[in-house]
Image (tube, rainbow, N blue to C red; front, side, top):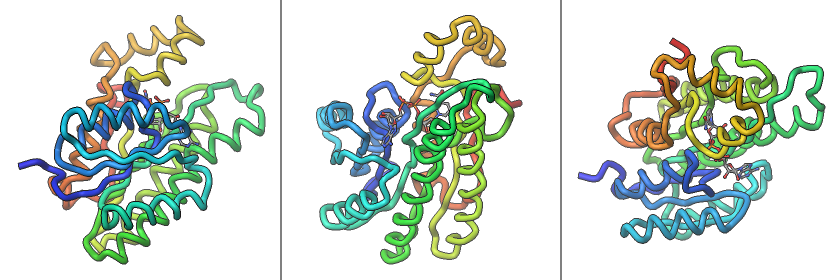
Length: 253
Ligand code: NAD
């Protein structure tokens, strides 16, 4: 039986066919979920939705800037009106700006925290309120990073945000456990998406060195993250909350 039958899932930052959000949306839809895809620009989410529909899945799209608090109300209200609510939220939208600390501009610091951390607070707060009202539990999956667990050079703001996401998820998990709302994090290592293509272009020597140091000797694929998200969002993960899945080919072992 499909693992997400009857569930309504929201995935942010789902505007790229090669990204972790797009892969998660496709995987959830394959397993029977109705998926809501959001991103800054409409063309990416429309392309992912078209691919899902071509496989007989159900996809809805909405342009969203995850840093805008009001947009979250509009989005969840639309989900309630059209599909009766929300069962799973994947807070996936993110940006990475890498700089040595002396070169890190204050604006870059704030932007990273807004996109990678404030958004998770806004989205979780709104989704949890709705899930409590629905009374049928729910799952929140926050995409962190290995940079939220161990020190990775040049990403002070990104890591501060991702580490914040990790511990906030644990707090929300214990706050919401009695309502059947589970909150977990997934920590990707190096996964081959546009984000890593940019990192390779900016610093090819260092990039290849880091990939070479991964115990499995290669980067992961977006599907590897989508499968972890699927486990946590589906009833297979029903007793899993306040924890994390590290998908990194052994990078942090
Ligand atoms: P990506 O750049 O392909 O996708 C991120 C998406 O987020 C983009 O489509 C972008 O438009 C969207 N986005 C950015 N700012 C936004 C905003 N303000 N509002 C709405 N959408 C916004 O990157 P990806 O590799 O698929 O990354 C997805 C998540 O995984 C991110 O949170 C990232 O930090 C995390 N991550 C990725 C890797 C990796 O190796 N790819 C590793 C660790 C963590």
